[in-house]
Length: 286
Ligand code: PRP
Ligand code: ZN
Image 1 (cartoon, rainbow, N blue to C red):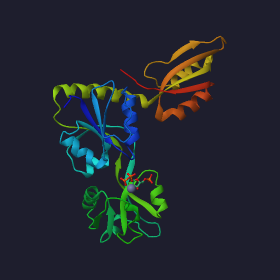
Image 2 (cartoon, rainbow, N blue to C red):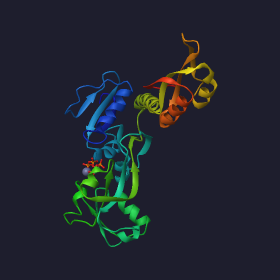
Image 3 (tube, protein in one colour):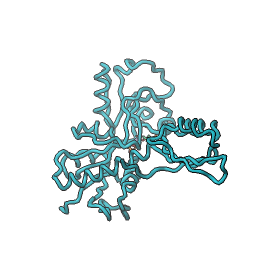
Image 4 (spheres, rainbow, N blue to C red):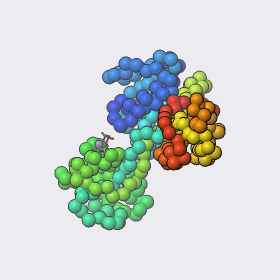
């Protein structure tokens, strides 16, 4: 017991790399974690435990880890009452009901009396109950996608991100029953010193999440476009405008929302902007 805050992250799988990436963006130095069960950050009182994602909610609930990064689907499937502190915006995927491609299936109620294989029996059962469908839920822990072809079940309910696994197994996406992404979870009873560490880390996570929502752009514009360009850029503050050697032009720097990036760029170009550069923002601290 070294008083360090302990964070559980996935050892291998869809969240593993991005979870560490997030921690590094928070300024943590983490090295040599290959094949190790845990490492300490070099410049923050934080230990990182590498676990199977299915185990993470329980470890956090029991206080073996103080906080964790895990898929929302796992938290919900484990029915843990841990609060979700933040949605982290990566490893997005959808829990989908899928059927063999060649089967006609138009309405949910056609699932009645059929069997559905899944590694998410709780979420699926809740969904079926809500929709008053009585189907047989068959729990399997992996390779759900092969269930129909080997005759274990009529349909499946599985995570989909690119959709390649389904396509490869000649399955068709039908209904999304849960949308998931990586989330930050926390044990409910951290002591004071751990709470302080946690709040410090959370501040860094928040600044990194905000930063990712924005991009920094730089461009040259004809002087007479300044007014129209300023209107296009919904900056937090007004953009920075700098004179250029060529007196007919100005350089403009601004922060724009990532989700409107291409729209804004197109409009800027229509208003004469040229030499547009964009840079990712590492942190945004208010
Ligand atoms: C999920 C799911 C599929 C795959 C779908 O498994 O069970 O196998 O991802 O992804 P795709 O739509 O990009 O092809 P995951 O990688 O989470 O591993 P697991 O089944 O071992 O938990
Ligand atoms: Zn899988």
